[in-house]
Amino acid sequence: MKHIIAVIVDNKPGVLARVAGLFSRRAYNIDSLAVGPTETKDVSRITLVVHGNDDIVEQISKQLNKLPDVKKVLDLTQGEYISREMAMFKVRATAKTRNEIYTLAHAFRARIIDIAEETMVIEITGDTEKINGLEALLEKYGLQAIVRTGKIALARGKK
Image (cartoon, rainbow, N blue to C red; front, side, top):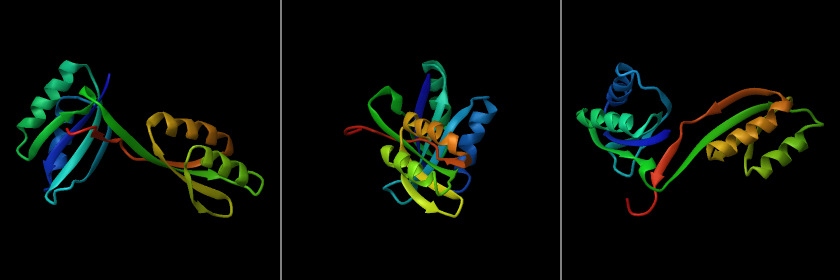
């Protein structure tokens, strides 16, 4: 089962390396990782997506809580949460296919962020299934490059 873990940490050099090192030493795989600032200036949020049963995630949480710069560890999958990721696709585009690609992007509420003579770049934000769906439909045009962020997530409600 996939778990989304939010790790609230002090915004200091080396903290991310220590968190990633913990996973590496224990041979836990990270499917996705995103780091960014929070509403508090000196605090960052690390969002991790990991595979594992509840026991493994509990062990990960205990180990993370032992790190000196970790303030809080939350398994967001234990409650209601909202998650998103972003992707950009560079796709081959000709005069004939440009309008088709634009229509496809529009149907997915994606944006065209660059148009060149032979390519277009499409930006999409959403859940993993939505992004995978657009990617699958764009393949027939010739994907030149794909860039995806890690998943970010927040608990719903007052949590």
